[in-house]
Length: 133
Image (cartoon, rainbow, N blue to C red; front, side, top):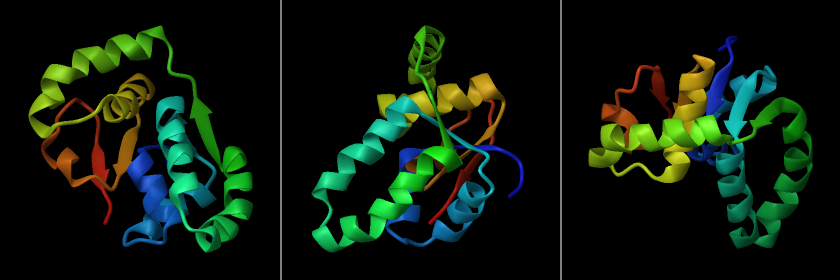
């Protein structure tokens, strides 16, 4: 995967937790061409304190290098409006504000999304969505 992608929090967490599908996320991250909404970055960071000490010890060096590999993009007023407009299109699948923030960034950037969340399988918002897991 050489072209840029937008990562959902679930995709980055799958990578960090070495879950199935982590290899595709690792390839995207290694290419240094990933983008992530600040909302989704916050979701990832909120999960770290809930991890066991051994997991956090393993992740600390990786987390320190992620800002150079994944561009965290501000969630601005235009993204807020896009995310709100996406609600009726994603309500049936139960997508959260964080999910819609990710999609809003993808729509703005014209990039595909990489997610590990199966609820996105039937989402159609004008960008390619790739499921990992």
